[in-house]
Image 1: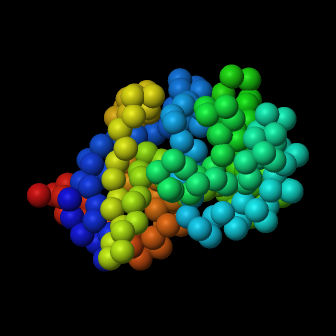
Image 2 (image 1 turned 180 degrees about the vertical axis):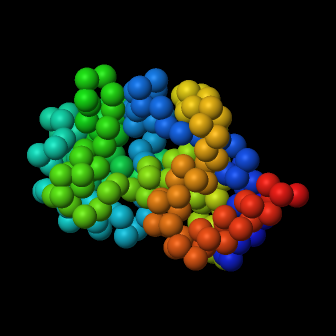
Image 3 (image 1 turned 60 degrees about the vertical axis):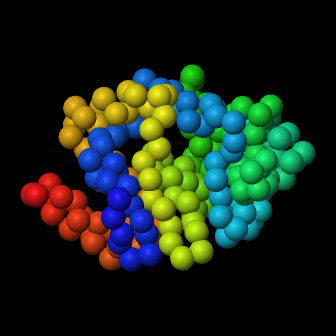
Length: 189
């Protein structure tokens, strides 16, 4: 672990390798698990605002879940998250054949909304836990992502480089430049 500004970072994000391999996992992270995607308070307001524009991209099951539960929910642990369909799929998930994709991101890609998706999804496999004085930035090892780890190793792409855009979105460009310096120092030590 090391500190960068007000973040405590696991060295795993510098040392482990990862590149999503949708052709292998079929977007399992959007349909497996026992909770929706983590959200922050600002994102709950964004979801409420963009839902009418995103709704046409969603499956009927997702729309039904959102209409019944809301555009976001408070999970059993008290955290804010996306609602689920039958305690499984994220309500915002859509499918391209058998591959799960994000309906919000689809609307973003088509220029309908200007918000890509929850930052927790964009950051994955990094998870951020906010505390009063700092944020913990950790690598989340999940066996459904074994193919992504293999592809990352093959392509020699560390986690922090794979999620560069998302890290900049969450912490800013200056923070990311500092992270790159730490990674380079670690590599050369």
